[in-house]
Image (tube, rainbow, N blue to C red; front, side, top):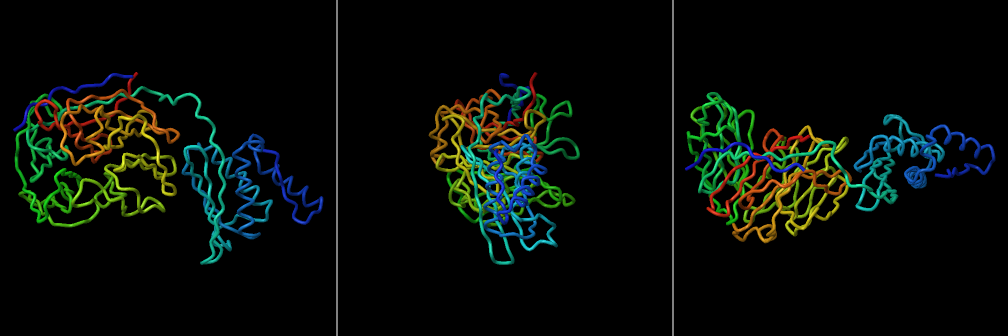
Length: 449
């Protein structure tokens, strides 16, 4: 049973230098001074970042001793590219003064791996010094981050666009739109079947005011009992139409060239994809409604995070920043080196997250569910349909969430939020407060004036 999709709706816009002498001779000191003067930019010689870089270089030299080393340098902090270049220049200059020479890997006797990361209050920089195949030493420095000053303001205002795709009385776990021969199709994942609908509008656009006609329904065969608060995900594929992930169950549609379409399901505990490109997967607790925290593959050096309901990946210039909505109500930022717990931007943050790419602001926005009633987020196992949930877009310019849109309001509770296969939108499943029906929305980001 379904009903026509209405037109799209929009929300409201809304320094000082200290060089050690190698032998105590005045000439050695003068040579060191001249080297630093050559290597260090004048604008950096008195900066706190330069001080920290030199301190780290001195610690590295103490651990490594003089010699030739290959340097690996990674920025996982919010420092901009210019600051990173200046920090690296100060570090390499001080290493030279200390007798540590940077060279190519094939000419080196060891490696120095430097990672720039940060916490809420400090920049935290680590160096792992490897000499030979076994010996490893670690050096670390921290420097207070400057106050953020004025609140971050995006270049353009951001608007969340929500389009009602489909509605039915039966439960919906996820939906996916796909263009196929003969017109658009809507794939709907339910508790016990995958249904495929053909668009019946007069025009070619799937978001016109028109109904969907069901073409086929593929039963989900499984040997395990599903948990009460069932969650599931659809993932579109290239060599076949889609995959289905359910607690303890995996299903795959037949290859594209095979007709008629069928669905093959098997009981398995294989991990679910967290992103449309399958770059990171996570294991799902087959008898519960959350991810265990075990990742496959890991995010950099981190292979386990706290148990979580949802995750989103925010692309940075040189790494990917992940945010996890943990089952204890906390939120964690993971950059491949550090796992940093953060506070929600407000007390109404729920447990549903999704990252959406756009041409606005930083290019990637974090969609977060919000509610005046948090009970359903801290106790998801409890059936609750009395709340009205919102979605809001956030950006993390300095690892502190900043709202960049007004809230998109729904007439019920958000029970699922998944990024779509393109990465440019998300599917939100809402259970209406008044009727108990399930509605599927496509959510995307547009740039306001």
